Amino acid sequence: MTSLSRTPFARQVGLALAAATMVLSTATAHATVNVGQYLQCRHTQLAEFPGTIVDAAIATPELSTLVNLVVSANLVGALSAPGNLTVFAPTNAAFGKVPAPLLGLIGGDANLLTSVLTYHVTSGPADPRRSLIPAQVRTLQGQTLYIGYDKDGASVNQSVAACKGVKTTNGTVWLIDSVLLPQFK
Image 1 (cartoon, helix red, strand yellow):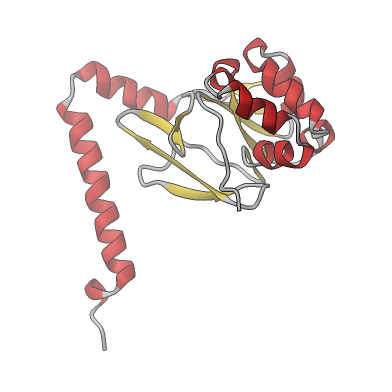
Image 2: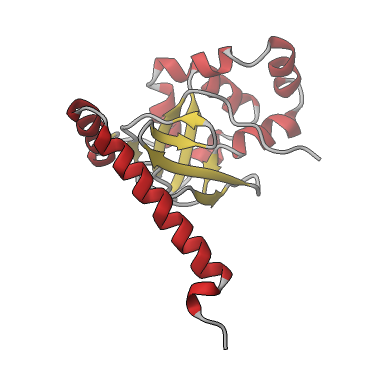
């Protein structure tokens, strides 16, 4: 019979706990202000918005590029429907980081655009501030994202997420600083 401490699962848990301990000790080693900001972000309450995810995006000027692409991809209905979605919403500045030829290619192909946009959406709650160990969440596109929280803040894959999400009638929106691209086959 194999000892529990020698199973692959136990090793993974042990490594994860060691990593979490390193993150916490690193955060503690920094100035009090950094620790305070670290803890404040983790405990920031969601803002409440009385409409849908699409309504919230339309009401947010820094999401105008995303709104235009959602309309182009004919996803307004899906993102306005009842449910509990999570949207990791790239800001206009995030779209500005994407080379114009690539953004044109994505925007010019309805299937590709839908794939990229649905890669930013999960079908349930996903709060990147809640996991000290990166967690996988499945997207509507079918692939997974990694969400997590460390001394640098909340992240989605390698994108930085805002500390304050927006709770809507059909889910939550998190602003992120880059466009997430799925793996293409």
